[in-house]
Image (cartoon, rainbow, N blue to C red):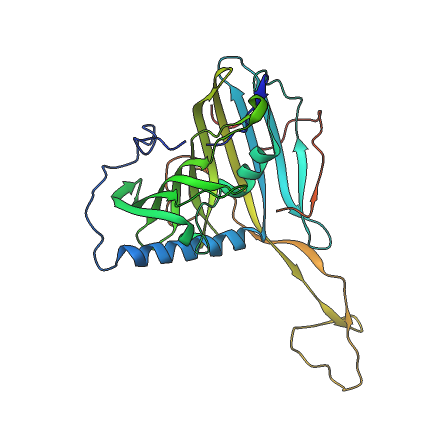
Amino acid sequence: MKATLGLATFLLLLSATGAPAEDKGEGPLNPAEPTGITVQEIIQRFAAKEKEFKLAREQYTYRQDVRITEVDDGGEWRQVVDIMFDDRGRRTDQVVFAPQSSLRRISMTKEDLDDIEKRIPFVLTSDEIPEYNIMYVGQQKEDELNTYVFDISPKTIEKNRRYFEGRIWVDDHDFQIVKTFGKNVPDIRAKKGQENLFPKFTTWREQIDNRYWFPTFTKVDDTLHFSTGDVRIREIVKYTNYKRFGSQVKITYEGTDIAPGQKSQTSDQKGQTQAPASGPTSSAPTSSVPTSGGSASGKPGSSASQVPITTSGGPPPAPDPKK
């Protein structure tokens, strides 16, 4: 995000108090050690799941709805994007709603959009474990889920690298991250007054297709402390309408469908392959009620080409985000 008198990227600061107080479904933190499993085993298992889910999500279509508001000035930035696949199976971003920005003191940057798409949804995979300090802090109830709680911070910060710093909640049954609170680091204060500042965020997840815990709802309510003055911002990100993308190939001979693996009646018969029919093969829309297995809260839920942001268009079919 940009400040009007200096650059400022927008994304997110670890609070010393842990989770936001608005999580009314959250129980007290119990510092007891886990039983029947070691802390290191929990870390290895949830990080492996995180990598699996991150890769799996790349095979899903979904809608990403972002609304950012300057609390004191009333300015707003909105963008609704459908993450899809083209007819060749290549991943694409299609902007379906992007009215003219009315932000006065900040503006969105490429880093902001990259964080919303890549860093907010998944914060720690098995490949990244060596780069982080991971401290077990206890067990906590999140709505109907029992969770293990960990604090995470980067061991070192390398130039041009982004990291997560904050707290995660891991389901004690399937060892999957169900909630995240923290920020992306580092903040950047460059020459000539340029500033990239990153606010705190909380991301909740829901179970999709009875298997994957994908992000469905992210909330920001924080103050960015620019050298030119403080700017309080609110942000809502909703990831909805998850549908697994797939393709089907149907073989026909003389107008008769041949099932996969089925042999033709004569050895000289030659099948003809129809063009693949690409598109979603199953769906599991997200909502405030989880598809199965519960949710981490009572709250609702890389691209081959980029479509430019438009400055006009009708409202999207998705409901307005929570205020």
